Length: 243
Length: 393
Image (cartoon, rainbow over all chains, first blue to last red):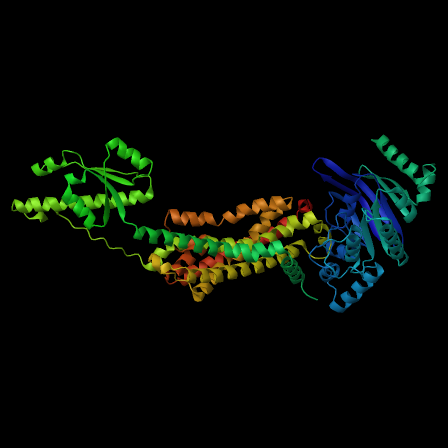
């Protein structure tokens, strides 16, 4: 479970987060939705302990992101926005490198890597060096790498960026499977349909604050609009009105 | 389960070993550049000396019939006298356009004044800015001076005075430089080549550690693993160190081979450089590896892109030359406090080894201790710099 409580973060004079709060439950898919520059990546980076918040708290399975960053990282599987892999290593070596860094033993790592290779259907290319991999193949390696330590909580920053239709479908089914296995899945996107079809919970974020939070249906009803997209526009509009 | 430092180290060593650019610069270009350049330079020097020794001084003499004794004296001293008919202005022009290298003008009044026992004028025309004819000209000046002394001596004898009267002092030139010492003029730059090879070995690994990882987008995922950031950086520095030790070893073997192949003896030098000396140089230079790797990592951590890191690190490659330059300017001799300056201490110790002089244990100890301490400090600093949020770019 991920709890974000009143996060503030500034970069120089830019106030990226101005009090972001939400909760992502286990066994549910939570979508962080917002326009570019709304603060989605900064929120996820702060959660992943890559950035330190100026104020506010974050907890992952009841471990504080500031007090116990290593414990938090152990419980998180993170696919960052920039999820580059090492071109001179094979797909398998890329995955195993992270497994070693997570402290997995050889037998356990081998078993887990093979599971992920099957789960993500990477058998055909995983033994090749990743230089020259397609975007879809690269993302698969990056996802496997993020999941190698079987984290309870999975954080994906715009995972479908640059993926073709088939790869996107594959990723969606993977996210659902993770949810069904009881994981807490938090992912960000600026694509409306994706969030609408996939998410159990939606957190709409704009200008560094949460402007709406709930199931897609609840958000739509609350803003009394036809679609989530209209609700989104309404939510952002009202946020701008508050300024 | 292995320690994270070793995991990072193993991955960096493997990955860079598969990168052709890294391999080329670390294990080929870096270590072989110095030995190749040195061998080339020595060969060129050798060629020049040999051809110069074969060449006799060619001197154009005008109106040689006015001074037959002088001409004979010059010819006896291996000067090739070329008769010429030139006025002063023509002679200048002939030097400038290269028709003649040196011209000796014998003026009309020369025989008469010589006869009367008055100073007889001669004009020697040469271009002193040309180092080669400059050397010939001073050789000729010395010959003419000797001829003058000989004449003076016979004049004094004719008057019943010993020629010793006009030779109050005699200078004996004794050159104490040993063949190994003379070779040092050439080998002086070897320290720099050795440090250069070493730094080249770790250059791309240091760039990769920060700017490279960031540009590839692999830095952010890496920082989400439950390992402290400084531990990751220590593994990377360690990998760079291994490559640098490899480059250093290859460079030293290449130097040994190159110096065994070039005929230094023909230049009156002996290179005191066999595998035993190379081994000692390796041990003396090795502590600099950690300092170099950490310094490059620190500098690279401030850069935003691969290209930027490359241009900054090229400057770092020049840093070890500064102390060596000072050592040359002030002709520094090894002293205990100088051993506290990294790169200078390596230079002085390596120079000692090349001179075949014994190393003072305290010097070696101070050099190793201070260089390692500076290296550890910079490694710690690199770890600190990795904690900054700005590292994400």
